[in-house]
Length: 261
Image (tube, helix red, strand yellow):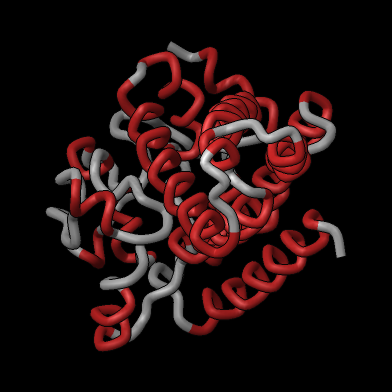
């Protein structure tokens, strides 16, 4: 199997499991009834546009770029002859660290926030919100990752593993599921859970500046952006962007959102 087929296998598998869990153990039952098929069509259309755009700009993909850099001895890891499991694991950790700070950058830069806002104005966060990103944001993210992979010479194995972890855990922590409290307390020690990431989507601005990590909570804990509770009551928890009305979405309005001041 190619790296694309492997990643697609994990993505569809996680998506299927989480869609089922959302039906049987939802956090917000109203979300599952809020025109889900229209929302899903918009979200996956955005994802398809992003994939086509990145393939156009980088036909070999991030993995292909990593293979090229490695075969030509480019990057710090290759110069130091770091190989094997150490290099693979280190590469995943570095990419995870970079994506944490990339996420923070998209919140602090007014220009980049215009792109990232599309992800946050969704008031009915569910598993498909994980692919609800402006295609231009995805292109910028790809560029950042290419620079990191080139500079450090991160091995292709790390890139494949990281992309699988990225997509799988993004689906998980955006999912509209409510885990039993005992399980939640254990899992959140190792991973960003849906209840933790939900705070990042809070309509309260200060809370949306918390929990930038997508996989493990350690970066947020290290840099003081970790939160496990909200000022909002659970049964009245609102998600979205403050003072933003978002009731009649279609694909064109989503793409044009970045042009709105």
